[in-house]
Amino acid sequence: MAHDAATFDVLILGQGLAGSTLAWRLAERGLSAAVIDRGGVDGVSHPSASRVAAGLITPVTGKRLAVADEFDELWRSAQAFYCGVESRCGESLLEVAPAVRVFADADERRAFLDRLESGKLGGHARLADDNELPRDLAAAHGALVMPAAARLRVAAYLDTTRQWLEAEGRYTEANVDPDSDIEHTPDGVGLPRLGVSAKRLVLCQGFTPCPPRWLMGVKFRPAKGEVLTIESPSYCERRVVHHGVWLAPEDAAAGRYRVGSTTEWSQLDSAPTDAGKSELLQRLAQAGVSSARVVEHLAAVRPATIDRQPALGFSSEAPAIGWLNGLGAKGSLGAPFYADEMADCVVASLR
Image 1 (cartoon, rainbow, N blue to C red):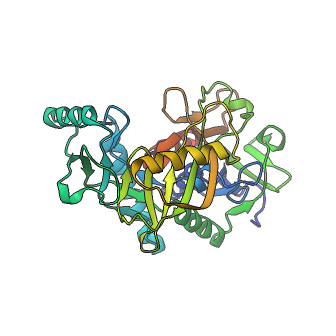
Image 2 (cartoon, one colour):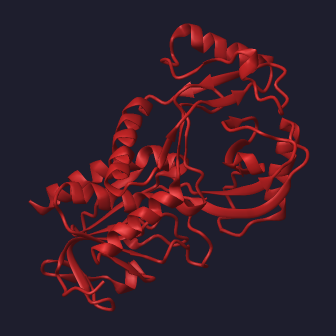
């Protein structure tokens, strides 16, 4: 990034799902935004949470087999946004395709049928026909099909965004400590070490063990998740399947799949563990995949909040500093909607 100070309307710290999507949303409003990122890694050089994310967009989730109240609104925003980025960059990023969830037992099947009959699923799911069941998995109680589930190619989206930013001279790879590197100026904020400044700065850094002081009032509840990439000669399925774990094809013809994920609330680091790998392989075997070779094992800490709502806005003490954080496990779905809201906040703050 070779610019004079005070060139930009907005500086964004972090180029994960939140920061990348905010950069696009600000560009839609005609604002100049520069992004500073560590290069897709966390503070100890492991892949960032966004880089580890599988990008699954799943309408029916949880033990209650429910569709979140806000799903339709978030999905409309996400689909329009990612299609727009695809059109601009000529890159295929979002795949909309049926996904399957296998019932754990007869009780879960009955609960689903009750919800289906009540109309609470809004057309987002139906009972799978026998010929739609995953043939290589145990599915004694049947399954449900989500006809319009989706998957974002997260790494491709982040790479495409970085290339766009680099082409316009608006990307810098650097490690920034907000508490020590940010300097308040009459016009907003500056980063003297990098020779840049802007009217507004937005923190999109995801989980950090010690959040910047402006975020101390946000009630975070981060969770560590571990995922595997496996190769299995005994499993062949081109759809995303949920069965105690989720299995998402990376290269179905070669028998390569991503499998996830664990949830850990106390050990908040990005180091893969033997316990996490064992848990995923055990759950995979219970689903019916007993032959699997692990080719990659990753972990990351998902930034989430206690109320499961993203944190966004500006500081009352430092009005030039804002944040977009806490997208949690549904970042691919929610990022376009909440980045749009944050971009509106930025515009309002500049009036």
